[in-house]
Length: 67
Image (cartoon, rainbow, N blue to C red; front, side, top):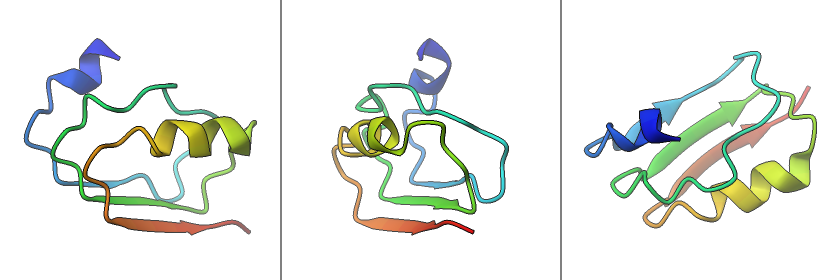
């Protein structure tokens, strides 16, 4: 989590087609993030991923889709 906190000005994050299976539980350190792309990412626990995403304070655009 501390690694993410160093990206204080990150506004867009594209994780499309990456082999992640989970996200950090709290993404609130991404204070400037407004756009997140998690298309074609298969999470082990989708509910936990949604919980993590809703902690992003300024998120406005979410690209999500599963294959």
